Length: 119
Image 1 (spheres, rainbow, N blue to C red):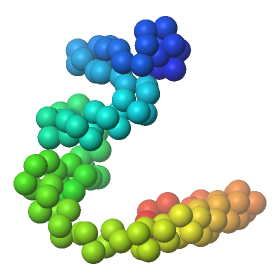
Image 2: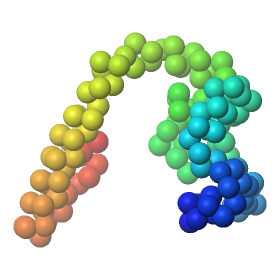
Image 3: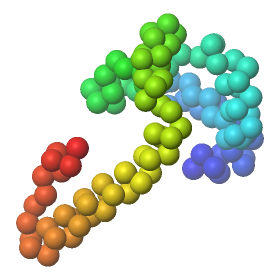
Image 4: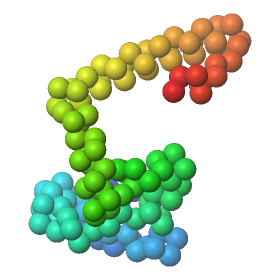
């Protein structure tokens, strides 16, 4: 739907979702330019976009802004080295494969899988 609207209204347009104005930017180069030149002008939308996820995300680096974000980012910076981040796809693939095998086995035996044990 947003792709169709981008074709109809252009790469930048505004829409209203449940009483909240949303700006849609469909061109990655525009988004890059916006965040490279104006990042400090934006705050995370905890009242709308993040609200359903706050119980899961808490008040860490994902939901923080400004000095609080900078402090949390500094705390985890050693964990975000590229050599560590490059391992994430392989780890995720292994975990997904394990879960898939459990689910297939459960289907064959007409059993259940406690998904909470996987996290």
